[in-house]
Length: 120
Ligand SMILES: [Zn+2]
Ligand SMILES: [Zn+2]
Ligand SMILES: [Zn+2]
Picture (cartoon, rainbow, N blue to C red):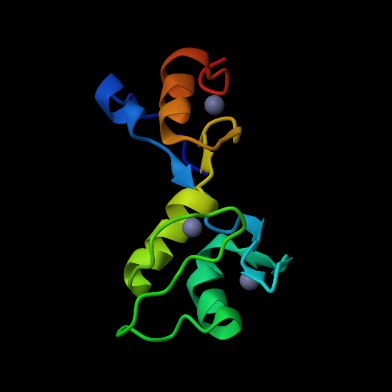
């Protein structure tokens, strides 16, 4: 084991952060008023939408059937992005203390001001 120590300038520290794509989210796509409710890893949601909910064509717009969602119908790539951004937002992890945050902005504030995992 070699001992390496890095002194990152402040601007670089601001952008250090990991998106936890393996976070499991319950799918709330609804069919006939019933929520799907299957737990799906965030990174597998596109395949889940395709296999379980028939989002498989690039030609036609789809209505987002997520519980409580009133978005306009949209094409498959937009819908996939919409679901990830609106319904299963990314979880960010601090690389130093592994605390998790639902917003990148909150992680940045944590890294700049509150993280106790570095050099303490
Ligand atoms: Zn589902
Ligand atoms: Zn939606
Ligand atoms: Zn931290």
